[in-house]
Length: 219
Image (cartoon, rainbow, N blue to C red):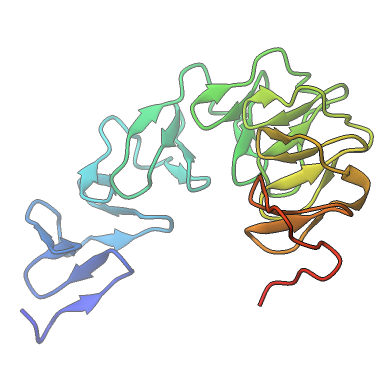
C-alpha cells in the first residue's frame, strides 16, 4: 500500500498490511507487535530477527545486543558475521554472565579474549587491552593484530597511526603486513592511500618510483 508505506529504518518498512525487509514482504511477521532494534535486529511477539531471519533458540526476554558482532541472552553468547542476514551462531565456550565488549572488534569473558568467532590463544587476558577502536591490541609482552601476534612488533614503542597503519621504533605495519625498507622515525600517513617517509612515497604498500617525499601532496 504506497499511501500507508513508511520506513522504519534503512532496511525495514511497513504499510497497512505487511512488514518489508528491502523489497521482500515478511508475511509471517506480526505487524502489530513488530519493532526495530539497533544494528539490524528486530522483534515481534513471536521472536527476534536479524534481517528476515528468525533467531532460533534465543531467549527473547533476556536477549541483549552488545555490538555489530555480538549479542547474548541468559544462556549463550551469539556472533553475527553480517548483521542483517549473515551467519548467526553460538560463540562456543563463551560465558554469557561475564561476556562484555572491549571495543568494536574485541570482547572478553572471565576466561578468554575473543575477536570475531575466534578465541585468542596464549594471551595474557589479565593485561590484554585493545588499542583504541582498532584491530590492534596488546598484553604485557606482545602486540596483536586481530587474533594473531604481530611478530617482531615492539610493544614499548608501538603507536597507532590512521587508516590501518601503525609503527614502532623499527618497523611500519598496515594491519598484519610489515612494510620493508621504510624509515619508521619519519614515516607518516598522508591520506587513506598515500604514505611517505624521508626517502620515498608509497601508494598503499607499494613504492612510487621517482616521487619526491618533500614536495608530494594529495590534491
